[in-house]
Image (tube, rainbow, N blue to C red; front, side):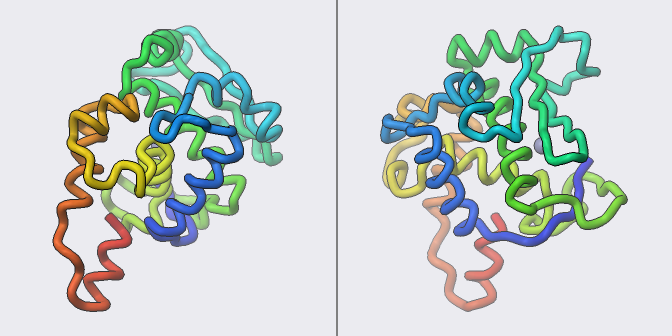
Length: 191
Ligand SMILES: [Zn+2]
């Protein structure tokens, strides 16, 4: 399920990612400490609270969720098995948690749903999809753009503590040939 929101670009999200890393005083050049952000978020961003919940409190295979109270506050609920896995350093689980934090941050920055109706996955254009925006912001925070340029998939995985899929996505983004036309350049921002 996805929602339409105001459009953004990969470049804008990259700027937000740099700001978020600074906000959480991330000292490591590569690895963003998701567990530290999870613990400290109410003191850094008072409109967001993070909670660990029992696995059966969230239905199905949904690892975590961001629950708005519609008064400007967001609660990130994370299944305890996902929290434990993330604390042990499983890259995909770290990303699940940060993805939900990104949803809250983007909403606070005004990227809220602009239509009541929900859309199916991949029905919206990437740049106006809340799901794409959260995924892209999460990736940019976990794998800083300039720092990971020129690194191998293994290096990205190891240095940034991310899953193989995330590292491959980032790696392949660098290998795309330069866009030749203004249209290609615009289209590139969406992916
Ligand atoms: Zn999401």
